[in-house]
Length: 415
Length: 225
Image 1 (tube, rainbow over the protein chains, first blue to last red):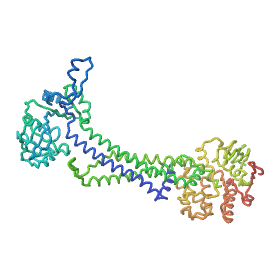
Image 2: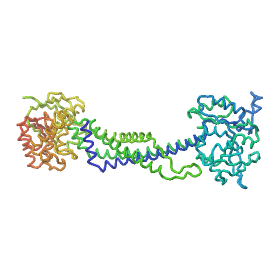
Image 3: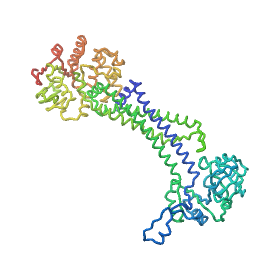
Image 4: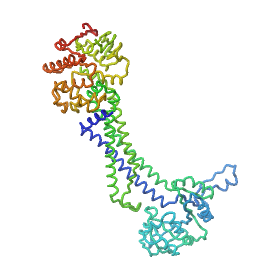
């Protein structure tokens, strides 16, 4: 065994150029894999975290557009009914007994927090221009518990909203569009035509354009006033769980129990999640391609080596080396190439990832980042090295097996 | 006299391009310490016989016994281990491993056998090289030596495990007169002084004439011994 390793080592060292070229193939493949996977998973984690913090685990609301059974179907249950283009009933998006529901849900041990709120479409008036957006009536302290709003404030404090009955905390993108600073007043109009002036007491930034460019927070009573509704008017219940993965199973239960639409975060953010899946598929397919190319390189080089070493193999066999010893000599070579190549690849991948992490990047209005998010999870480094060694072992196996099958007589007879 | 090698009715066929009987019921026995030359015209089957005797060719009928062990029907791995311990080879070409030094080349079969420690093996290798007069070359790359020197290294390598038999396939076929003479003298010294058994295939009549015993083959049969 030791002798076999010694012979393999001598073979590798006697042709350093060839060995290095073979290693570089693996190094390049693994390096690119690490760099790509770090960036892609970094982006995925970053966006996932953003959406996770800015959206509730479960969102209960009254979906008025949801299909409802028609009256004729209720009356004429066994007959053949044809209904064409049924429209929603004129009803408010009010969730009845919302505060009691919230209280009940809060008692569940799986639940971390519950925040009832009101949301509505509004138009923000900026001189003659109207910008559409939405307003959320919340208990701001409760909202902070769920979404960590305090950390996202760019100006003002969340307590200022509590103190100001006509206060408003506005998304950063929206404030910029409206040219508004803390202390300015903004006029808004509801779809029902009611107009109200509110004072901006704070500016927040979630980091996602779809939130920052349209949303404002106000007190629940303020929004109830704007919408000309009573004190029990609540349209949404937002829930955070201790374990986010329970949401998918928990949401339908709530829906069945209270009769309102209950949506988990995965369904609500399906586009984001699809994006992550596609990025992952891309990363892995490109990396596998790179590694297969590197594998072919090793296969070629080992094949050449074995062809050049026919005589050596024959004499080794004559002197008493068994087929498996010969196979081992060449397997060791390919594994050493694979292992060293992979380790170098990990280092290069780490270097590239570090460089990418330092590169300035402007996320624009869509995502607020100034540098690309890079993931340095050691898991991917382990995957990388396992992947690299496996590919080279596979690429080396076939030529090595061929070498072990060489018939020494054919070569030694020399005729 | 102790018999070191014995065959009983060894028969072999070639199937390409058509079925052809190369060896016809060969019965041969070789005594310990004998220097035997296997001669005959080209195509008479002498090389084929030697490769059967070497255990590398297992595709034959009949029986083969070396050093009291029956080798017929053993598997390749067992035969490889057997060759390692009991048979040394010298071919027409030296077949030294070019990346290794002379000393390493000589040591490899002994390291494979692992009967002695590395230290002892090195001493033994030096001893063999000294016996063949090439100990000064020990640390050189094997490819840097002259043809005659390389063949002597190959002989040292064949001797390192103190084999029962040294088999040579045209061991002087690629050497000039001077080196042929030298190799022959080495062989003679090995048999007479150290009781080494040698079986050499050759078409060099002069070489054969000087050996202890000549076995002549013709058309797959031993015709004279």
